[in-house]
Length: 470
Image 1 (cartoon, rainbow, N blue to C red):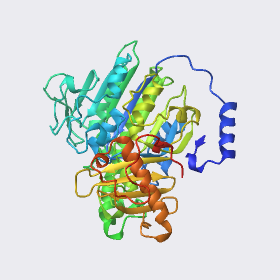
Image 2 (tube, rainbow, N blue to C red):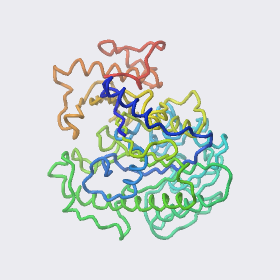
Image 3 (cartoon, rainbow, N blue to C red):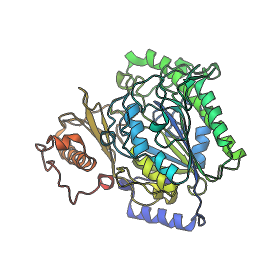
Image 4 (cartoon, one colour):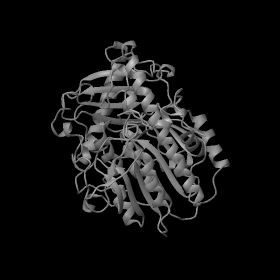
């Protein structure tokens, strides 16, 4: 089943979809809290999935996850940098609202997190891998009082190495491991799954791969640079480096895929698969030579689009494809809802549980993202329908792309007279996002001089940008 974004869905196709859903409705689900296995990778771009049409990647277990669950084809990070994105995932708030706008930041202790809420709701909670929300300490022991509701802990604050790494438990003595880090972390995850308990579990497994350095284990160092098909926006001058980096990158992706397969098998062997939500995603993507750069903190599709696969056999129909726009700020309210917990009022993301499980419900009409806050390259971005608008720190429009006609972002339409109305409308939409989410530029009065109705929005009567229509 494919669920289209709302702006593409005609009234006839919408009625057809609802009718089909009613005709093949799943049986009533008894009240039972599901388990949640959340697998986060680092720097895995949304285009690097077989489901996205990637011609290079061998990832049979991710393909299986998509076949057995939902593939969300238009998921975006709220900020394509590690710390801000991870803060958004846990808090359901945009990074500027969660107080994490740079790498190596401490997530404010007063911020509510999905993990603390699920612990209160009776979940056994565990975290394995890279944390990166406790300042700059490398690798960094994170004391229990700063673990945001995670009880089981086999993690470190931040480090980017794939071999012979360390992690910490409940005291600051590092535990050293040999070999490929995701293999050892998956071992720990399987140990966690095997622990006897009557409680449902929430396990957050955070891999560094495929983050640089792009050095996969020998068994997956099988991609030949000369055979890789590059994206159309990689310039000739960048091709040699891009091919070398991509060969290692894809090797790391395949190594992670292998470990995802181990996790899926363990869930099956223990009879947990049917009632376990499995989520696969990333904190951000990576350009890897696209647009001639190797960057993350940029609004390009390669760095801002992320993978999102969700399997939950009891409630999500196998083979679902959702083309609606989503943001990782939506993860917390959506997953809390699927787990039967209530999201606090301060969460800014949208709850897409109905979209995932029934193929209907409020469908987001736009997404908002930001980057480089407080830095010279500061930007904000909105995507609505097929159009993407980017503005700089002074809210001057710098780029406009039609992603349907120009998926590789090669034609900047921002200066075209024929697109002026579109630019102004999307800029006004960005202003509404800023007002609703407490963007600091609203307080600074930077929106007051904006053109065509883009002045400081009224606090009352503002329609949520999640439901703006094209």
